[in-house]
Length: 284
Image (cartoon, rainbow, N blue to C red; front, top):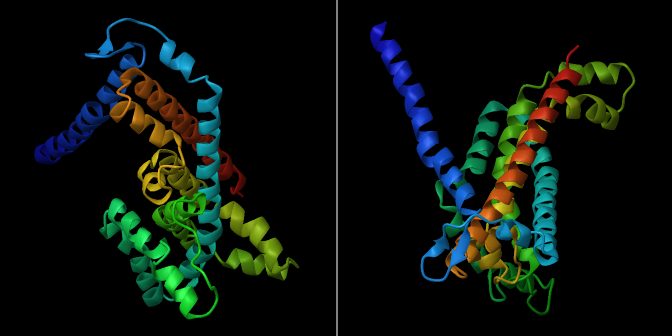
């Protein structure tokens, strides 16, 4: 018993220590640096000021933030529209088939995201797989211009983040008691009404979880716009990267990072409250 108690405490305090060292302390340091001044030679000057946060109110940065939120929300919505039917099919399939389909969903996790993004270049470029296939089938006469456009960025975001939508949806749909759908049909509801009144409310925790798992990473994925958008699509993640590595304005990059963290925190708070509300609504 003593050994079990010791191991339990070791795991708990080890987890707390890991979060503190690699999570809390760097975040506090980043927050502190955001209130300092930039310096040409020493990178930062220990002088308290709010200039970095004042600069965040610039209309150009505000437009970029709105664009980032729009692209993240659009990618989230498209992943939901694609992922929900796919997760529903997996949940309703026979066990042996559902396991194979789940394996196909999880296979992308075996490869680095950056490598998969570069693989998309070979698919989307002018002489890539997609254009060659469409021209071979006679569907187009000239190659489609997809690379280095916003469309390519959307494709990259959806391709990368779709599994994060499918897995929570599958977990929620698999727990769904399909006898409730049969009961709603017996009471006169058609398929659409049963889906809207029964399936969606009961799977709402999975929907909210999937949306958060897609929306939050989409805000900070700077390498997808760089590779597929040709650095023409400036999002919040790209701006933060450029402040640290290109402009070397560490306080400004830190302030933008804190702002992004606050946005994510608000989204998580919304997720928590929505999850509680959806939990209340599905109780008998």
